[in-house]
Amino acid sequence: MPKHAELHLEGKSYSLPVLIGSENEKAIDISQLRAETGYITLDHGYGNTGSCTSKITYIDGEKGILRYRGIPIEQLAEQSNFVETSYLLIYGTLPNKLELENFSHTLSHHSLIHEDMLRFYDGYPSTAHPMAILASMVCSLSAYYPDSLNPTDPAQVDQLIPRALSKLRTIAAYSYKKSIGQPVIYPNNSLGFCANFLSMMFAVPSEKYEIDEDIVGALEMLLILHADHEQNCSTSTVRLVGSSLANLFASISAGISALWGPLHGGANQAVMEMLRQIHSNGGDVAAAIKAAKDKENPFRLMGFGHRIYKNYDPRAKIIKKHCDKILSKLKIKDPLLDIAKRLEEAALEDSYFVEKKLYPNVDFYSGVIYQAMGIPMNMYTVMFALGRLPGWIAHWKEMHDQGGNKIGRPRQVYEGEVLTNYRPLAERK
Image (cartoon, rainbow, N blue to C red):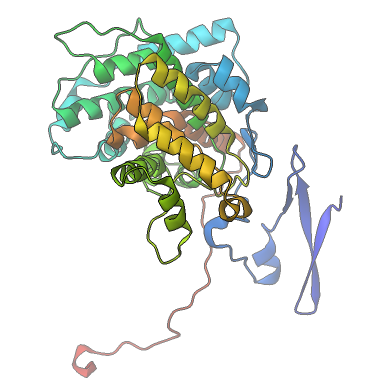
């Protein structure tokens, strides 16, 4: 492979370094392009621009491959749990038994949030979206740990990481309780990470809450599948905000806000709304397929296609396999799951979708499982945030660990007015 690429511009030649990743990904380093040529590159949506080098997650969209630190997502979803996967993403290797026990204990130790923060919830209207509460409450954590917010101090970072992982889970559950007018349920540190979350979500003071291990297992699987996806919108946001040396809580809060967008984390909610719409129209899948192909029709087939994957999203395959198991266990016959399956079958047999490589993505089936678990639709994106948290932390940490930090500052091509003199108000029409 060549070590340099040649750029010919205005009669001059420039040598640009070529980088080859460990999975043979190829990149042309243009970091000195503007300094040497006066030119910048223009890439709307950054689809062809690498903002960093990373050792965390590898994706091959053409082959439908997703690996965390080299380990296939299929293996992690079947054999690991969320705490172990979080450790893997953040610290780079699978923990040994003692490391996992210590990490789990630390997460349990930090499960409570400051009691004063409970008063914050009273300031939100009952109609407040849980994502709005989550973003602001996570950022508010910065006020409670002013002496441990320095991203360049490894000792302070080591303190903040388990706090962020554990307390966001508590804040998320409390946000749900606020939205339905129920009292908060304090963490039960005798429970595992996911079981503790479900307890805070669904237990009430007047009744004993029984942990269903199948539901816990399904939640572990869903969170693992969402744990990282390299340089997506929210992760890039965390990195960009973190590049200013903003603290971990502030950076995560920015990521939560980015995730809230319907083109990102809100997509699984859009899938459920689409399935309900089809169901209310009599479950006519053929009509939905026809409408989705009609450019004049505003209807869109949600949960199909992905910016990166041009093959079947490997996460969607795993979730689909678990859908039947969970719904059967709970003795739920969900017509929306039936519609989803028929919709997938019809789309994968339709040349329009096959040619455009529009395969089901991770959002297509996740909402069906969340609904079966009793998690309401306005909490779907919160669940996504809870799952994506270790990925955000891992990228924020990696960025600072690599050293030589530069604040993110994209360029632009200006297309506005040229030099224009100021006109006094009396001279303006």
